[in-house]
Length: 294
Ligand code: RIB
Image: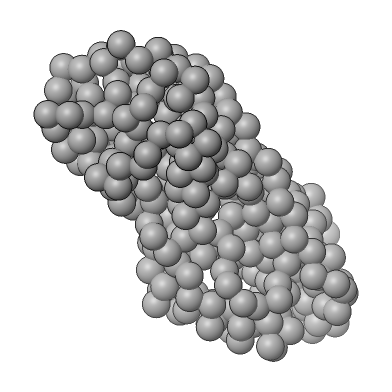
């Protein structure tokens, strides 16, 4: 076979088996290390199961998301792993109705009865803000993610719960909506840190925005954590390479990817199996970017 350069005919294999052994992966922003680490877990797990992966990046755009779902179905993928760009669920409904195997990961979507691999974002937000309160902080700003994705709303719920249980009233002026991208963290923090009554701590709902906030503090000549404490969320690899090292909330990214592939292959092999929802747990990771309130 090697001498003749023989290549098995994948099309013939697909026609025989009725499968393409291909998985579609739809992500909102593959430049974000969080999604890069998830897709790495998905690809590794799919490779071990003799599946290939087609990656589609929606740039947080729900119209582009619809386009890619249609494209992947035309390419006859055996199933999809789906990280939503927002909270619209009509395309998922159509997949569920057509009994197309699909797993939603990270961002829950209201409505369709599909398998899901999620993380307890309320617990993660609660742990982050409880930690800041234990350091004595009372004026804690929150740079949120987009309003139409469940991880951000879950973390905000955890933020509010931590303040409430400590008897600290929520100052709505300290909540600002970012977009999970680094620039939004920098711009929002520049505004927050130039206020006369600036916060003593910032909870950024993902590490990229936290790193943007760190740059804002540096630009204003503020020292971290002496002048401002900053905590992020995700625990991407970069969090261990910034100065000071970023305190954050760890998300089990590789596990999310592997569990998603396992559930998807089980669904491909038995379309009528009962729905499965896995809720994984985040974990506070204390490093150097938060300190006791001055
Ligand atoms: O960093 C990207 C964010 O969007 C992560 O926190 C993840 O939960 C995703 O929803």
